[in-house]
Image (cartoon, rainbow, N blue to C red):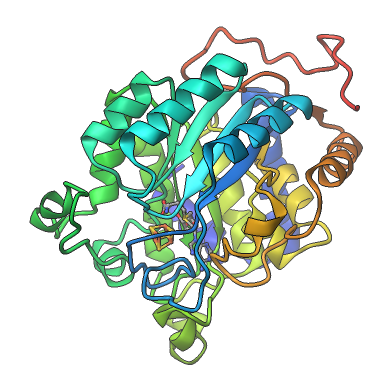
Length: 378
Ligand code: SAM
Ligand code: SF4
């Protein structure tokens, strides 16, 4: 699909024509990654962050936020719960927190890999090469690092570089390449290290144009990503962007992309069309803008992954990336049972095992849980 076609779809308003896009994305999803919906247990390991991203509630200057860092045995308890719920992957996500040291993380990854059959996905921000190497050697399988926008000017406006971080070891490298997007270089490096790599963007960032968003989608293809996460930008009042976005966001007539539910479905569907093999989550941000059916509509319009939150209840509300996040209070067992029922009701099947990238495992059968005779419901 070419840039013009992507731009036309992003601007399309006709429900009848959009239903063709949803149908096509769903067909391409079925053909390439099958009917399985892979469930990845999410653990928000720490909300400490030394960054000052202009959009995120975890940013270091947000002094109103109580900070936490989970203990290793708490994370391991979440890993055991993921196994009990028959999830195949554990996603360890956090702010950019050097309190999660290279050795501590490597030890934790080793424990999870030796005690469970789980694949381990990391989303710990921009860490030095030595950390990424050590964690891969410890057995981590995948790394998520959204590049947020492919427009370098917008990127640097919302994602300031680290100036000096004692002990982080990479501040100077980031500043030297200030004109480029450091997260793109990191994604390439992660792939070279053998990680399955995941990127993505926020939709409707103030200052993001339709041309930017079309370029983001084409970049997903150029980067040959295994996993692609897209979700609406949701303003957080304790951030520079959130404080000013309501008054400063130009009207869509001037080329500003809206941070709407509909725009998110368009991007999910177009992403599926340009990256047929990718694992694409129906994100919590989407479920936040439509609590009733956002997750299902994402799955029906190109997505094939959901990431149920396994973070212990005492920490969940503190991982406040944006306000009013969906599923803050649901216990994992209740959420899991309801989610699996809703997936089955969509005519889809529950994925079993780690659900790796089909690109890395082209011989992996697309067979569903039903085909394998595996019960889908507890
Ligand atoms: N610190 C790691 C990083 O930045 O990659 C991982 C955690 S960070 C909270 C995960 C993702 O949350 C970011 O990549 C960003 O896309 C998303 N995010 C942050 N603030 C957001 C906001 N206000 N609205 C929607 N998504 C947001
Ligand atoms: Fe920190 Fe990630 Fe939030 Fe940026 S997006 S402030 S790196 S947690």
